[in-house]
Image 1 (tube, helix red, strand yellow):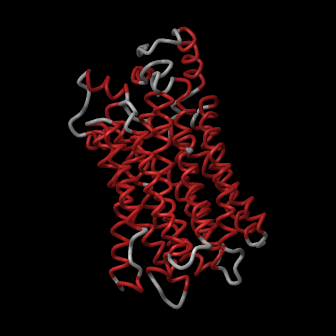
Image 2 (cartoon, helix red, strand yellow):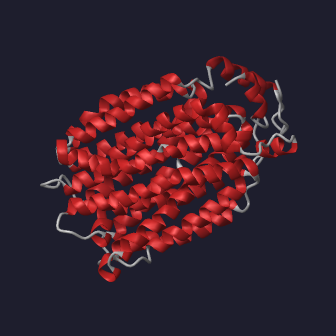
Image 3 (tube, one colour):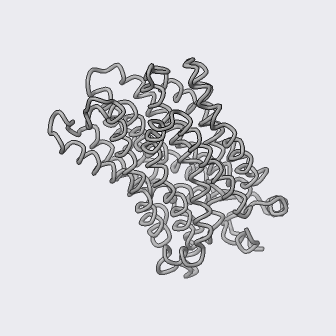
Length: 451
């Protein structure tokens, strides 16, 4: 990050609203993650039988994972629209609209008729609602992370964006706790209740987000007349290399999660003989996501101290080595070994990368196209993530567990190469300089400081 980019970071000590903004963004991220990721759990455990019945459970799982993938394919479109609007009309309107859209779609899933009720209409309706989920989720991340980033103090951006990134494990934990309880409900209620419950969370989230102020950096750019006519076109034309690098960085995290967590849940329960029960997999994921809340914030704070790039390099290198042992340990069919595998795969392999992205991605782009650039890089990779559980299931049918293990290693290697190719935006000399600026600026100063 060049020195000129310090000029667009907003107040040195952050705004007085930074904690409220971070909490509001996190609350929305929790709800959207609960809604979007809860679908992954339902797809792995229930939706194949309810919407794609057949003699072979693996075929039903493949169909459910294909529907899961549709939502991921829709996310880049949501990212394009949300990113464009975030750079044109502001971050806050995008946050509110995306939350409403996601809440509507998720609640609707809980009301959908099954294949036994309406035949082929059931999967068609499920796919339609899943697309709406994908659009909403694609628009969400850029607004939430940038609002927090741009309200934060210069030397604490990793800390506060870590809060927002922790919304993912919080939502994941909540979704799976609900599934852990609902698994004992009769019939379709086992999967309907978690989706219907989301409406309560949406109401709470809307109350919190309605009180969140607009980003000071966006307001400054608007007042200075620096907004561009077409942010998406501008960022693709001038910064396409960073978009490609961001896609590679993101694939290692999100597609890796699709193998190590989403697919692994299905692998454990559908293996012959099963390596564990549905209760076992949900318990393991609940433990991992609970710890992941603190891990994600911790990893975000660590990037403020050591930089964004070093953390990514170390963790992606570890993930390359973790690919085979991860499956070998799960194959022991020991419940507590499986829990340990989920904790490592989530709290280290995924959380550390997510903790870096909250600051690294925004810092790669200028303020007037930041929402568009960061959203594109973040969401385009979702298409790969979305088809990964489906592709991983096919690889398993052909090569056994070795196929998924190799795929996880390949994703991690792509992340490692992408990290090597991406510039560090928070090097030691800049960290030291910022610390001096922070120390020399009155704590009650809320005005931007220019170098």
